[in-house]
Image 1 (cartoon, one colour):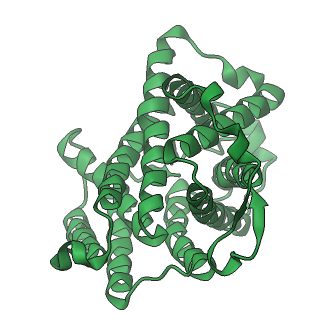
Image 2 (cartoon, rainbow, N blue to C red; image 1 turned 90 degrees about the vertical axis):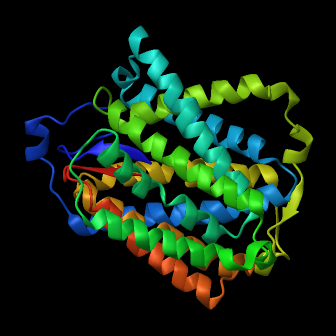
Length: 338
């Protein structure tokens, strides 16, 4: 999720749209909403695809490395062909880009994969989507930005809903994995940090090149801690069951990884950025919160995952709290974008 200013249409590889470009570009709100919903659906399905890959024996660290490296190659190649000037970078920008890629993109994705490997997809996403609320709290108490009073209602609703989802009164007897819950909460913190760093980053670069460099540094980081020559290449060619209601079907691991990189990272990101040409970022961000709903539905239809009635109610309360938090910040011209 990248923090983007609602300036005139931010096209891939550009830092700012020229007025003469705007005059020749028609805004189609219906297309913008369709693009956001498509991106949210692709991100949601990607979570289920990732669970299938993880079940095949690939570790969450390796899966994160594959996604980040694949996305880095794809985005850099696209920019090099379409907008090579967007890849220009100064020496002073490198430390920030490295921190953004490693502490933001790499960390949040690894924690997310670790969480969904140990929890049902819907629960993991609901917990991680506390990040916008954390961003609002940071804005209010750290940088002293004006925040509307509804933030406190959002906080109360989100924490109450989360308590219902996790069912804290049942302790560990509710079947939730403690490490999975901890990973989800840590992912929410990392996600919030990623949003805040991205907000600063887009003041100096366009969103696409910022994300591309973030993926590059994330890929370099993982290449150091787990070199590619140690990658279990033999495992990638194995055919694995798609699990759940599709258990009778099998695909090679490499095909699932290719789907995850192209349709689970590059395409949905491009769809979301493109949607900002047609609708304001504030509206796009709210529509993007459709992801946990889609993810829960896909996990139910594909993997037979389910939430009991109390957890469904808790999830709805968390989403209401998140929506309130998104509108609680005093700066109406900025919002968080995944």
